[in-house]
Image 1 (cartoon, helix red, strand yellow):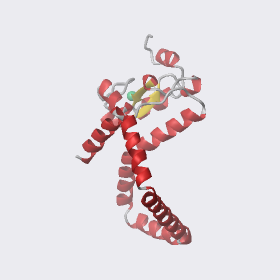
Image 2 (cartoon, rainbow, N blue to C red):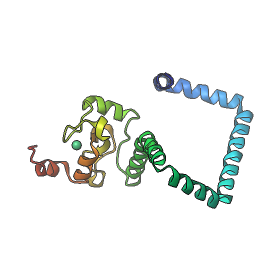
Image 3 (cartoon, helix red, strand yellow):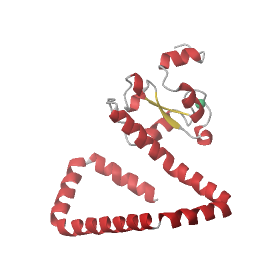
Image 4 (cartoon, rainbow, N blue to C red):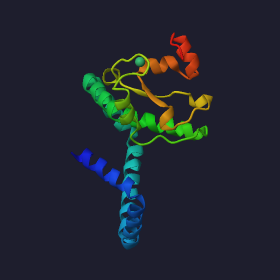
Length: 182
Ligand SMILES: [Zn+2]
């Protein structure tokens, strides 16, 4: 439900971007002091938490090690859950960071994964396995390292195994290697 609402708000914002930006600006001007105070408080809290962590780093590490020893299966489950929830987002940041760093053209749209999942009917573009079972990775059809863009039209979803196999091989060469005509 919450997700639906945030998607709805996001769509509304995108459709009326200038009006929303204008509203943001007016809101900021009218509430400048309280916004700045909130930012300062957040900064202080984060800084204090980080300082505490650095001062107690060894103790934290020791407590974590004891927990890991006592509950290996709980730890593994928690790590799996974390990876499932955060993996795609982290991978997206890494991809976009790399693309910008090497000066690739294009920016993917925010919902590109959802669009591709639908277009590919939830299947790996190469081996047709179900991505809901294998997990998915976003692949650049023409690899970035060969001058491919980071825009939607150069993206496809592959299962992790196909993506590792394809690496940064030219798409035509790859199709030949797996015995598909192009
Ligand atoms: Zn595959």
